[in-house]
Length: 68
Image 1 (cartoon, helix red, strand yellow):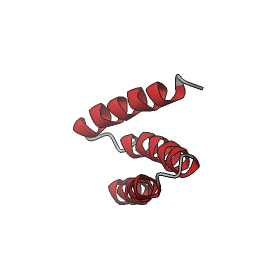
Image 2 (cartoon, helix red, strand yellow):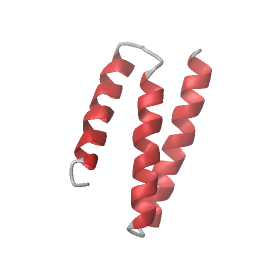
Image 3 (spheres, one colour):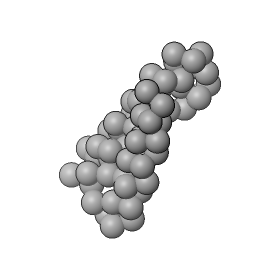
Image 4 (spheres, one colour):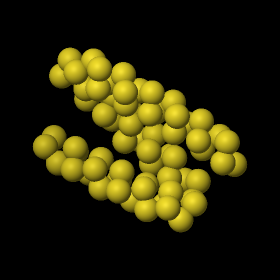
């Protein structure tokens, strides 16, 4: 799907806007996009980028947990 990366990019922008408004659900959206990018980068064998996105995934879950 060629449009899926664009959809994830838009979700990331929405998440950032929610974060700027201090809405904790931004971390759920971040988790969705980080999971996608981790998977995508593993598939295309970009392991360093996949690792970075995986770390962001963990940090977004941690952020959601701490913000509650």
